[in-house]
Length: 210
Image (cartoon, rainbow, N blue to C red):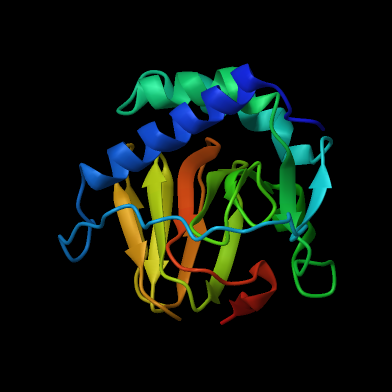
């Protein structure tokens, strides 16, 4: 899918900037610490890091996720993302395969990139975009070297850190994952939508199932 055009590019820049402002206005739900948006590391040429598609089964849950998010904190951010979501490229980590991932997870997950090595706003880091999970999906324990931040837009999901107890997250919750920290997500009856970003450069293939 082409994302060419000054208007679309400006809209992508706007939602990326608004997403980071929302992150900077909050603190981590566990530690209480905040973060600042990292300075972008330039990149000259795009590098495809994911499996691109417009027919991932989970995309059927996007309208419901947007409807749910519209009645909670960060509703304006969800609305703006909804306007752009049909113009964006959705992908999955190419390292997630039927050999190492459940079918329910592969059918229930996709990521829309805003910035990173594969664009559309080209940079080495930070890699940022929106992640969608369907209902009743388990994103198992995994870890990676770059630190990561999540900003939750929908209710009903739970988090686990370092293989610990599950805890609820609400719209507006911000979670920071430290380098190589184990983390997992599971959803309930409703789909899950969140802004997600790696703060440092790193390949998506570097994710390790913990």
